[in-house]
Image 1 (cartoon, rainbow, N blue to C red):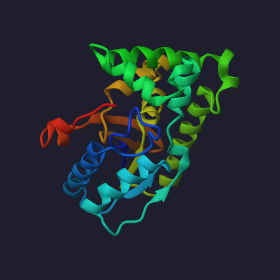
Image 2 (image 1 turned 60 degrees about the vertical axis):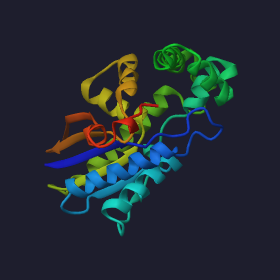
Image 3 (image 1 turned 135 degrees about the horizontal axis):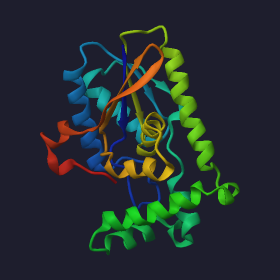
Image 4 (image 1 turned 180 degrees about the vertical axis):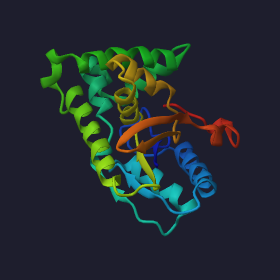
Amino acid sequence: MTTIYLVRHGQASFGKTNYDELSENGEAQAKLLGQYFKNLFTEQPYIISGSMKRHQQTTQISLEQCFPQASYKTDCLWNEFNHQQVFALYEPKFSQPEVLKQDVFKEVDPRAYLAQIFDKAIARWADEAFHHEYDESWMTFQTRIEQALQNLCTELADKQGSEVVVFTSGGVISVVIGKLLELSVQRTFALSWSIANTSITTLKLVNGELQLLSLNEHQFIKSQQPDLLTWL
């Protein structure tokens, strides 16, 4: 059996012009993740990272804690979709990230409000009538992630008993789980709201078939520094 650990990146910079950078919280989360990995793995796993800055930072900071000399493979197929464009094409004023942040945090329940916006923005993105407006349509994104997953399974075919860590994003992990559980688009992206930063989703690969072992493990943060738990 080969075990695949899908890791969501640490908290990024929500509401800033450059979202694609870890916040201080995100850096602290990545350190805790690395310390957890130090206890989890007896040998260095095979490591893959998306090419986005938040993926690379999470990878590097966590590896400093457990396998400081480790090398890893960068694969842009594991990158997140352009959520800022998805928000902006749903509501033009959200093309300014700081406006979205202001709108969200003036609400009594910011998380619920953002979820409402996100659901509507995703519904528009997934609507075939609007596919041509996006740099990457929903169908293209879904196909890319499924290809990344297939490429990994093919690569691991001759590595039985190995362990693999993939540093990626919540939307990517949701698509993987959605494929395995045959979820609708809406249910697939509903998962995004439960996937904590630096949480771990575990799959097993047996005889070429993937199975879900666990989803959104984040007890290693909750038990150590619960104030670091974030979902945005």
